[in-house]
Length: 109
Length: 236
Image (cartoon, rainbow over the protein chains, first blue to last red):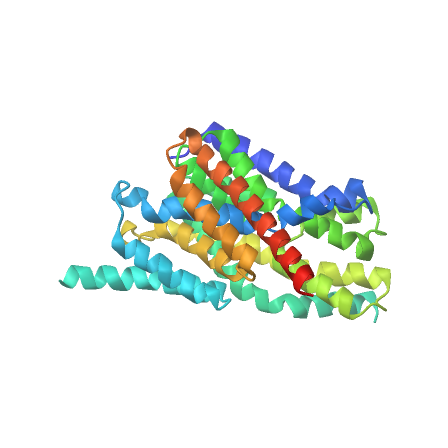
């Protein structure tokens, strides 16, 4: 469960902060250029944050009480392989589909 | 091209992205309800933030009982890339009135941004007011679908039984977002560093390991790019 106060603090500040980021150059920084070192590091924010967030969720899922679940790891790899081909929807379908399929097979055995 | 024609052209150019926005926003609605948020909370987040990846980030961390400032910092870090978008748009639409620019900033999303800037580059003769109209055409389609499908997901989500293991939709979503980003060697090295560091620092309390891992990965990516450039300069 998510605590109400925590939720609203994060929700409102994230909304304001995200707007400030989007408005930054269009709004108050005008034509000023980002320094080269900042651009260099900003290019890697996505690939820096997402894997760090995903890895623990895949290896130690809450749903199994933090015990590694081979089915989830295989499903994550399936999503990744399809995602490499550039299809976001395809990757989601492959990931969840693999998990359901493996789970179904497991109940049969 | 008249501004009106440009608006509808942007609208059509971004139409294919509906295929991504619909399931992605529905998934946010479903996962948010699954995490214990009510419909008002779920919708507030989608309307205030409209940035799916950061919404999922905040949600995952809050659900993990991470401290508020960690959830906030991590989610904001995910959105930092939009400072680049903001800077990239200035030469094309920086002339617009402040209020207009504020609305443009609010509506800024990845795919539509990419389409808009590519069109501006391909058509350097576009008039300034036409560019603004085109931008709104691009974004106007995505925004209502984003709200509507979050609501739809939030309403139908409760009907989905726990057997569907929806908790796993969150990591799968992030994997789907990350894989297409691995377009160069530095990106791949940064992602690898991020995975390894996340495991190495998993013991750090309050999910601080996430921020440490992300910082390390950004430096790895940047340094790899610099090393690659040096090597190319030597070879060339």
